[in-house]
Amino acid sequence: MRILFFITKSEQGGAQTHVAQLTKFFVQRGDTVMIMSAPGGWLEQESQRIGASFCANPFLANSANPFRLWCASQTLSQTLKTFQPDIVACHSTIAGLIGRFTIRNTIPTIFTAHGWGFTQGAPRLRRLVLPLLERFAGRFSSKIICVSQNDLALAQQHRIASALKLTMIHNGVEVQTPQTKQLTPYIHIFFVGRLASPKNPMLLITAFSRLDPDIRKRARITVIGDGPDRQHLQTTIEELQLNEFITLTGTLTQTEVLERLRIQADLFVLLSNWEGFPYALLEAMSAGVPVIASNVGGIPEALEYGGGTLVKNREAHQLTNTLAQLIEDPHLRTQMGKTAQHSVEEHFSVEQMCQKTLAVFHETLLQ
Image 1 (cartoon, rainbow, N blue to C red):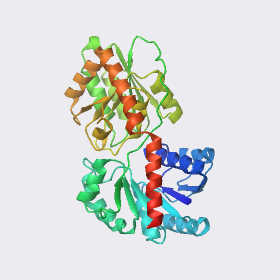
Image 2 (cartoon, rainbow, N blue to C red):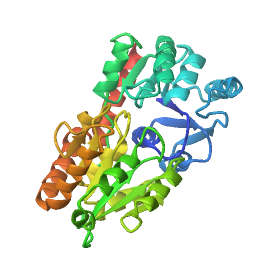
Image 3 (cartoon, rainbow, N blue to C red):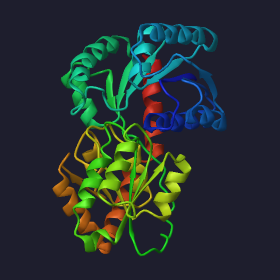
């Protein structure tokens, strides 16, 4: 097969990880793969490492500017003529819309929704406008892959496409080799994500500040990621006099994040106002780290088989109690971590995800 993956941004993130995983799988199968995305990010470098070609589309961005959208569409059209893919796989909202409206069923086109932009908790304008656009784009979709049952239900609720076009494939990750944790006097709590909506690390800081001082002094928090909310987080940490307890690292490479999870993390916290099926959560679970996560989007599906605790969104009191329980109970943390790793191995492996996606590609080409 000749496959073109079309995604808005190439910066490191869940959708980009997903595309990189599939690219590696198809390249190893002997397929010819090209990735088109905005230039200069992690995915561009990763595609070269994997052995796929990368085509930069400098007009791709999370922008509704009509001129940029038109230019991005024209750049895609030219690449389709030269590369002549058998199938196009679109990822992320902007690329998904541009790709399908540009191709308009002339080439088999699959769209993977990495969490709908109109999901529960998203801004009201998105929830009003995006379903209409996605319903129209659904006419030009050979298949639509949802990464969670929650997203599949939303697509059905909003009549995005016919039942025959919709399918669900959970994200998957590699199971990490167990490693001995570094011995320190502290319980290390990790938060990984872009410091911007929908992520809500402020809730973690607020809940942590309300812990009993004797419990709080036994823990340390590392927040990995960057974004527009970073300065506000830093200011809040200073105002609450938590500098010695909380470290903001900024952006780290995926390799560095996974290494820290394997050898340092005792507990992983992911708080968000809305989600699809987050990779950061699966990566922590694959490293045998117990998790606390918001009860939104596809997160309950990731924890269906155990390994973590769900908390209500925006409720600091419940999170404070859950943190206290897990900080004080090492046996519970250990058992949850083992369950988390087993859950990923059995239900959310990258091998399962790739094989199911291959089956969808084959089905699409036979239609």
